Image 1 (cartoon, helix red, strand yellow):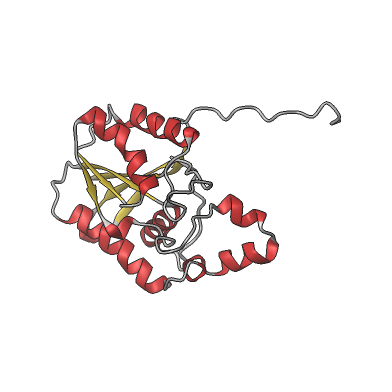
Image 2: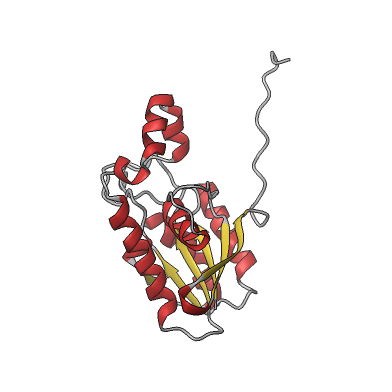
Length: 206
């Protein structure tokens, strides 16, 4: 059984209607289309998603093209699901070294959660996703950075939860093996994504 964990596309942090669970911004929607372009021919048999808007919207183009429903699973949601306002890791880093180090020290607690409980929820979602499926099933799971870290840390036998920085709309490929083991085929694939626009160069720069 194969699984592709897809981190959501870039969300709109400035959205005023849903600051706690923002939709994708324009480049995030382009990233979602790029994910669909890559996965539409890979034999995906089931689409699973976190219920958060940025994950569902990233899953939608693939679901539309394949004519498959999106199965929502709370356990694939991000640790920040209960905060009043979403903040990306880029924004958190820009708040300064003190705030960034506080986030890195325990990202689950930073969002008001418990690491053990969160880890259990994610691994429970993983078990539920693969538990009753055929051996030749191929899942696309649309989720978030911390759940991807939880699964990779579990698969690789790592003590800490956070070791990886999955990019927006990146893909991490797994295989469900015998006795509940998880094999890792790739991490943070980004070659399918549209190139970033070049940065503007100041006429006064060297």
